[in-house]
Image (cartoon, rainbow, N blue to C red):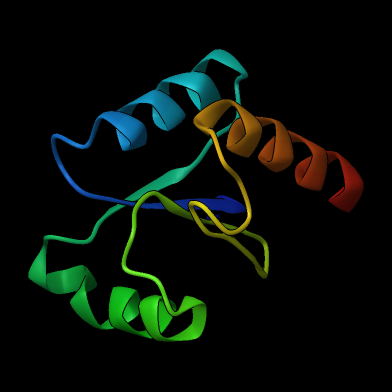
Length: 90
């Protein structure tokens, strides 16, 4: 089964790493989508077009997209938002 949380990230991105570490600490499973890989290029292009943003980590929770500097201002805020959205969807 696919996780409800997908993180669109790039390697060596400190914000992406912080978010993934926070979710691991919160025991929230997620799929890490490395947007630098050719296999994820099309999916990320669609997400970037929808969000009008090419910043990472863009995070998908169910059908909801969380975008840096639009949906959240800090990685802590993002992780709390993810937790809240997951609790609401249970």
